[in-house]
Length: 463
Image (cartoon, rainbow, N blue to C red; front, side):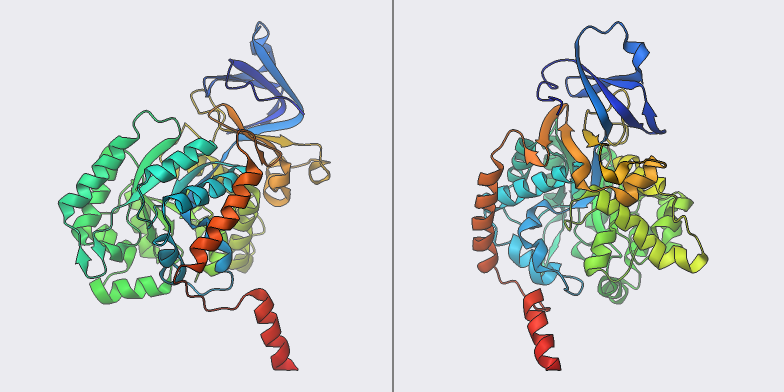
């Protein structure tokens, strides 16, 4: 196995068998990495005079790390509690659990999420904000220590039940968050409002404006569930996306999570405003009311990334889910056997995600000036031999087993699924203990029984 541990210490020429460029996979190319940045890319003969450190990667593909455009890194302890649950679990699971998490629990949950993300090929995640009360520096420190790049959202809701937070207080907190991470290699600030009904019109407009001025994403769950749409209609007479457009809070800064239930008019509003969505197909399959019309929106030109929503952090399986969900819900009915041609979902998970989270040109592509956030894939596996259509193969046949090395900002962070600079076994032991403490002491309410209980109930009912 090639030794990549010195990559961040020296300017290095990396020569793999294949490189996945924005235009597609190529052979006989090399990448020059210096101080965590890709400084040059070209055919190997371009670097014939190079005399510095060189790392050869025979039988391997070098590709950009994936972007998770919608995550909740502090919810890791609860993800397997919500299998089979109806929608809007945030009210019964996430809010009770996160509000019961102290700084230690947030730190451990975030580290666990970061490791899982990198194991699955994600080198950047957009965190939509936490409801935990600890300072966001706990999350930032944890993801940075683990080596994961994070677009870190600060929730700016001004409505908390019957309480209304003064708008000037909300704006002050937002500005402090935006200024706090200047010069940080891995933390990129973002603003968020959890759902439109958690904010007044004034707060929605103000946070959108601050995001636009700072050039950062404005993250929000929009048109995810039928219940939220109905609440919006009752309260305002408008659907959530319509409300944002009418008050002037819908613009290119918006990163709308899910957007599963959009009318044609709302798609038109989103497209005209230049907003982006995070298409989260696994979340739709596990706990959603619908699947976003992602292929239609992509064809129309809506900006789009792929997100896990904290479900399963295997980037290749996310690509397969993205294509499969569109095939089953839209393409089959029209005889569209291509359903995006494979490349659509790979590109959406890379360049599309980079654009959606505000890091276009810096992540999601192997190109001069981009961060050296890279994956090394082992091509010498039965799944990829023989190879006739590499892009489709990555979408349909890929999974985290292909990932040999994960590099973030030029530094090797995960090798064969294991942490390079941290004790993974110790983290797992601590995570088990901490999760037990948090979950058992939180007022979590679930509707569906665990799988074993479900089986017993059904067996007894049919006996």
